[in-house]
Structure formats: structure tokens, C-alpha cells
Figure 1 (tube, rainbow over the protein chains, first blue to last red):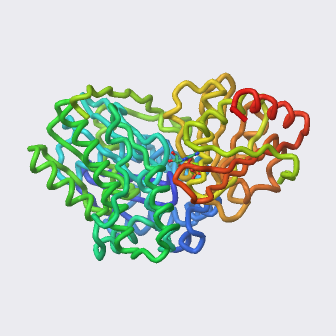
Figure 2 (cartoon, rainbow over the protein chains, first blue to last red):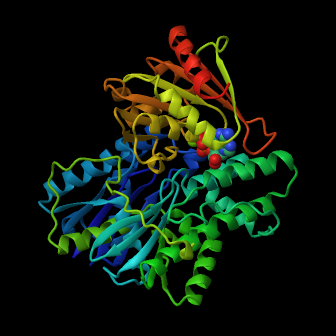
Figure 3 (cartoon, chains in turn brown, purple):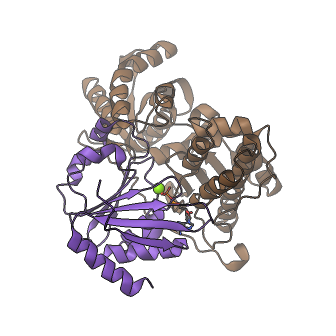
Length: 340
Length: 166
Ligand SMILES: Nc1ncnc2c1ncn2[C@@H]1O[C@H](COP(=O)(O)OP(=O)(O)O)[C@@H](O)[C@H]1O
Ligand SMILES: [Mg+2]
């Protein structure tokens, strides 16, 4: 069974073809980064227009790569929330039209849930109870997947982790996007050279905060304008990683979950991957971090999740709307002092 | 933008004080009002927004997070609160993508971080808040509040004098 996935929730137009939920035949991303780099970020109106321009050529590329015809597709899966409304609408409308024209089912999925699904591309069996850390430019959350239910047990109370990478990179004059740049530069620096704060580690919950770390870097930079960018990057990155790893491990031990998934664009960070590998090895947890192409926004995760939703009997009505919000109510977990 | 000649000037010594100022400011806000929040990265715009939202009845202050990527967050207080952040926009027509124009038809309070790009498209401005971090300490911020209506500024000034220890 072949699923076509469409993902246009933010700045990348992505189309994927996936067989039986896990066999990725094509995962194409028309990336707007080069275009946006000039502006130092995402420019939504242009993002929406670019999605429109990119969509059909990207579908064609995916079909060509997989040697598949449109009429071979069994299910059309698409992200319908959360994201930038103008961008979501373009992918969603395309999926609705295709599903109607080819008389095939439409499956609309939640972008956050799709990110969590990406761990299956690292070999995690579908439906495994796990703690997922989703860290990207727009999201930083800890989710508990149990009995096919995702519960939001922790989240950032201010900036997302990827946003902190971008803002710090911009302040250091390093360019955009900040994540890959800091990852690269940090390899040449000493992560213990500057002791930046580890925000929220002493709080009895699973929430994150990165705005204080962002300001600590700015303050240090102001008073040490000549500080080596390598050391600044490495020390900042080390603080982000410490908090992400520590809180995720805490969630797993508190909820007695033995499987951890790390997904979202920040999961491409090489030092983060290493830190998680070491920590989960030491605490005997199983760890799944997908290859980078399934961490950043991609349609393979949408197609994969869409396939399983289809198998479970879900069908989305043609009237389903795009929604900017994620639709998850947080279910905060209180930690006892001994857990902190 | 609004002239700052009659502005209220306050020095905040901590994030808690900034939140408290926001809370106080909220009591002078009415449905339909719009507040611009200006200042560099780390100046405290989102921090102040937490206080304003809380003063407008948003129960969970942790849910008030940076909309730099999402561009618009909506919170439910005693009135709907729109928290907009135009940090990533470089051209003003980009606003067309985020249903910006629709916000003004609802009786909500609209708070905008990084409003500069959209100045020509903001139909009304109630208060403008400039936050400056002089970098003398980690926690000191200079906050300037101006208003398009001198009477409302005067009102707020009395509130702040009464409650903010000035
Ligand atoms: N007096 C203060 N007022 C506001 N924020 C402060 C103050 N002192 C320190 N801070 C810290 O500075 C950071 C401000 O970040 P944020 O509100 O995200 O800024 P912005 O939205 O302007 O980029 C927060 O981490 C906050 O705790
Ligand atoms: Mg902000």
C-alpha cells in the first residue's frame, strides 16, 4: 500500500512516497533556506507563495524517484495542524483535490504527532510506549506516547530550543539557520570554557526555558566582545543539551518508560545525539533518533503516520480545516523534590 | 509610532518586576486595544507579555511563549489575547499569510513584539512600550510607556505610582 505524504506547515515544501508505513520510496524537500538566508529567517508570505510554486514539481520529482504513477497511490496524507495557516492551507488543499480526483482516502495528521512517528524510521516499532523529545525552531516538548495516546507532559515556557540556536547565532553574527552553524563551530570550541546557566533544571516539572540562556550569552558577548565564537557556541550548545537530555531522562524515569525518542530539527545536532546515546546507554534506556532527513520537517513522517491512521480506520472529511494551533492540552507532571 | 515625550519611564530590576508591571498595565487595557512591544533580543518583551496576559485573565502563564516561529499565539483570558511576533518578517506583505488583518475585527487585546515592519498596517495603537537593556547588569531594564491618548497615559501613570513603588 502506497501513501503520498504532503507537508507544508512551515517553510519547507515536502512530498514523500512511503510503502506500508515504513519503506520510504521518496522523501523530497524543496528547501527555502537559501532563499530565506538572505532575510535571516522565514518570510511567510513568500513561504506560502513558494509552497504553491514548489508543490507540483516536488510531487513530480517524488513520483519520478520512486517510479510510481499518481494512480498507484492508495492514500493521501497531509499535515493540517499546527503551523502557519497560509502555508498549511496550500498542502491541505492539494491533498483534498488529489484524494477527490483519484477517489482515494484523505488522512489529515498532526505535525507534532508526525514528528514523534519519525522515530519509527530509526527502527522503533510503531505504537511502542515512549517518551519523545520534540525539539525544533517552533516546538520544544516532551510527550508521552502510551496506548496510542500522546500526552504533552513538558514544554518550553518561552523560547523553543531551535529558536535559541537561531537567535544566538544571529547575535554572534554567524548567520541563519543557527542550528547547523553552531553545531559546526562548536566542534572547534571548549564547551566548559563559559559556564552558562542550565535553566529549569532545579524546577519540579518537565518544562523548559531558554530565554534566560539566550540573554546570558548576549550579556557575556557584550562584556567580552572578542570572545572566541567557537567557545561561546560550544558552551551555549552544552547548556541547551544538558537541559534537553536531563529533562527527557527525568521524564522517562519518572513515568517508568524504557524507550526514548528524540526528533525535530534540533535532533540533527551531533553533540545532542552523542549526549543522548551516552546517557541512555548508562541508564539502560532504548534510544531512537531518526536520520537527519526525518528529523527536520519532512513528508515521510506524515505519510508513515497517515498509513497507520488509515489502517486504524481513520478517514478525514474533505471539509477538515487547517489549524494553526497544535490542539494538545498540557498535562503537567509534578516532580517530588527527590526527583529534581 | 507614538511620541515618547510624555512617556512613563520605569526601571525594572528583575523579571518578576517586569511581569508585575505587565499585570498592572493589563488593568488599563480594553478589548480592541493594541500594545506594541519594542526592544532588542532579550530586552524582555515576552516576559512583559506574560504579565499583561496574566492581568488579562490568562490562567496559565507558562503557556505564554515566544511566537517568533508561530508568529501568532492566541490565549483565552477574560478577553481573547493575541500575541504576535514579527521578528522573522522582512517585508510587510508577509503579514497577509497570518490573517493579521482579521485580528482587528475581533474584540481582543493585541500585543505585538517586533512591530516595526508592520507599522503602516496597524490600524490603532493604544500603548507603545520600549524596553532597553543597558547591559549594566543581567537584570536591569529601562522601560518607557507611551500612549496615543494622553488621558489613558495619565490614568496608567497614577496606577503605576500607586502600586509600583515610584
Ligand atoms: N528586569 C527584567 N525584565 C525582563 N526580563 C528580564 C529582566 N531581568 C532579566 N530578565 C530576563 O531576560 C530575558 C528576557 O527574555 P524575553 O522576554 O524572551 O525577551 P524578548 O522577548 O525581548 O526577546 C528573560 O529570560 C528574563 O528572565
Ligand atoms: Mg520575545
